[in-house]
Length: 448
Image (cartoon, rainbow, N blue to C red; front, side, top):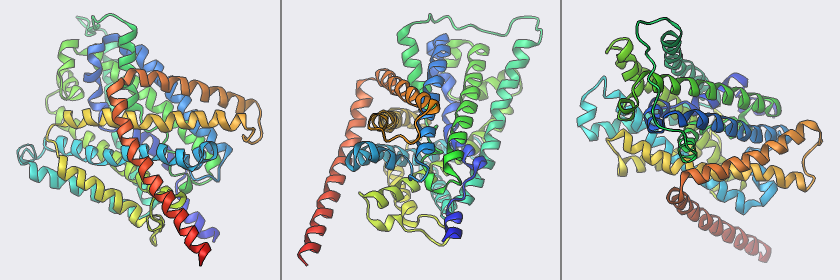
């Protein structure tokens, strides 16, 4: 039995940190400078606020995994605080956002793949088939077990960091090397509170994924130590990379030109290096998208297993294959992602990422604020183990994380939050049906 448990807990510190970094740094970072360009220097305080807020959120997940190392991730954390019904709805929102993410990432990867195969830009059926193939490739990778998926996460994370390092190096050269004329173009947009709030929302979308280490808690070696360390290391690394790589194009490309760019990093490299560097960048974008697709496939599989274990989904979704991977827990989300891809395949990558930012950001907030409030509820009930100075700092961080989530909700706006509510509503129905079926089964068993 211990040997089987060890084979399931295959994710160490390196793989878990790579999961945080790999899931957070995806295709979106290659488009974010253009999205932030209209806000000018409002992006600087926005990034600082978002980075600090996400560190508090990361602190929440890290503390929960340290306090309850045997718990199987946020589903159990929130069940402890609120009961099974609320926990199910919170996780339902997060699960839906993950399922939606899979086809969007595949679509983004195909969009950049068209740089090498132009036929994909004009033949939408072929592009759709290619995106489907990418989704199922990583379903198959994850069916090989968490260790295989973990090594893919490590390799793709290392590769996707190369262009980020290149952007930072270009910025160092531009700002620190003497030039005949200054290269920096300071954006003229004035700083304002509304601008900072709006830019913070976009920045938060880019930081989604800081919770990735805690989601597959049942697969992590020594989760009480590994998850907190991986969460903090990954979040700080991502925040530092994002701030640097967003500031460089903002200062080196005129604001009006950057705001209409479809590929800001490619334009930056073409402007200061050579046009051929755009294709090289496209290759790294594809690797980044595929690494994200691998990581989120792992997460959505674990979430599906969580539903099967704790209620809401049929138990067959929780069964593991010979590699310790959830067979139907991966196949079912893969089928749903394929259905969404077939029904809604969009040749516009910008349109796909608009959908992603609207739905995914809004549907991620419930689990963030839910876990933050769960810490406060468990503390008030005196259910936090071994209270001390570390736990008090964690409780303060949870309070500040909850405040930040409210701030982010204001920035998102009413319409996306309403859409998130529409996503949550079916979860209430699904849980009600499951509860009714469970009660009915217990009554029949008692009568027998």
